Length: 345
Image 1 (tube, rainbow, N blue to C red):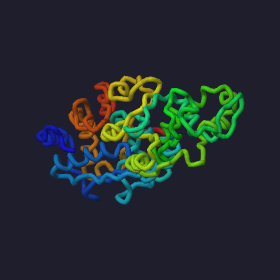
Image 2: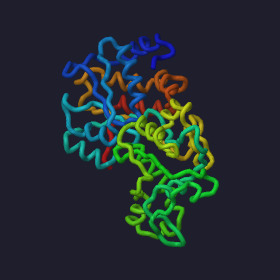
Image 3: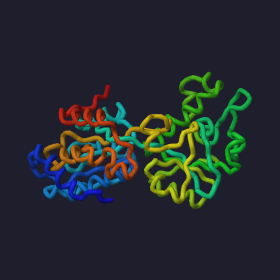
Image 4: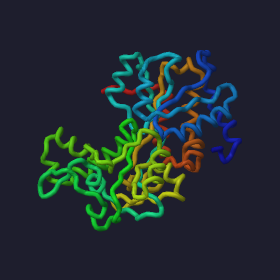
C-alpha cells in the first residue's frame, strides 16, 4: 500500500534522519520477524521506509507468530540474529529472562497501536451475537451441566443458546504460536468460563485446565499459519466461525460477516474506546545492542511512530490499525529516545 501523499515520506525522512549519525555497516538491512497480525503494518512501514531513506535498504519483514518472533529475538546478539520482534502481546518476564541469558539486555518496547480480535463467518450464513460463555461452551472439552462437568455434548450453536444460528459448531482458532490465541484465551475463554459456579469452585490449576482445554472431536480447528489459512477453512466449511484480527476482516468484508460480542460490534471506534471487549495492544521489540551497529534501526522506530505514518488518517489506520492517542505516542517516543528498557520484574 502506498501513502496518500507520497511526498510525506521524503520530508519525514529528512526530519528523522537529522537526529542520527550513519551507523557502521555490519549488516545492511534491518531484520524483523514475528506476529502475523503486525506483519501487514510492519510491511507497509518497511516499504515506505526503504523508499524514503535512500541511505538504508528496505527492512526485511517475516512472519512466524509472536512467540516465534520473540524466540528468534532472544537467540542472542549479532548480525545473524534479528533486530526487531513484532508481537500482538506484551513480552513475558520469562522471555525477558531468556533474552538476558543469551546476552540481550537492552530490550526496547514499542507499543504502536491496537487491534481488535473478531469472530467472523461466511457472509452467506447466519449472523452471530456472541457472548464469551457461548464461545467457551462451543469449544471446551468439558462443560458445566447440572452442576457438574461433562464431556462437551454440543454439536450446534442453537443448542447452546436458542438465539444463535442453527448451524454446526466449527470453531477455527489460531494455534498456540500466535498472540491472537493468547488474547482469545484470556479475553474470551477465561471470561466465559468463569461465569459458571462449578468452574469458579475449582482450584486455580483445575480451572485453567477446564477453561483452556479444547475439544478434540474436530469441531475446534487450530491454524498454525496466518489468517489466509483461516479464511480458506471458512471457504471449505460453510458453517465455520473463525477468529481474525479486525484489520484482516476489514480487508475481506465482501466475504465475511462479523459477530457482535456482548452486543458490541467491533470497529475502530469501539476498540479505541475500550467498549469492544476483545481488543489488544500491538508491539514491536527492538534489540538495543544492535542500534548503531545495524544501519537505520533508530530511524525506523521514529518513522514508524510518527503520527503521519501510524496516527489518525495515516496509511496504517487505512490498513486497519487503531492508532495511539497523542499522549500515548508522546510517552512511547520519549521512552525510546531515553533508551528505556524492559525489566523482567
